[in-house]
Length: 150
Image (cartoon, rainbow, N blue to C red; front, side):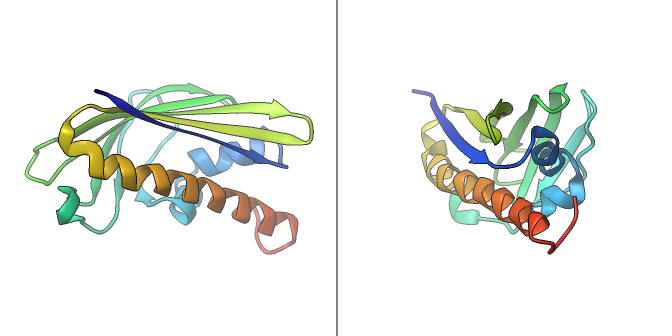
């Protein structure tokens, strides 16, 4: 049975500001992981963090940009596993930015948790994605309060 992570967070900032945190590698690193992302369809990139052997994750997410609609939608594959080219999670991350009165609703859908071994990763990432999305809000609010720039 496939599981899907889905979260929605509202930011009192325009879509263009939120978009920057989804597409600029140096800003993505502030709330997610080190990466070599480029906003180009077909670009293969990696997110890198510390390995999590108990979750069969070597710390590298192998990704490919699948779709980009500037300031509206971003979609990329997300593959990972214990290492040596063995992939145990083959999934898709979809971001949707919806303009709302006074800001932007950021919607996340991370689908493809199909294998029974993905349940631990699903649980960790479900919580992790929400925490990381809230970090974007903190970063945006710091900019508004003069502590940084987009």
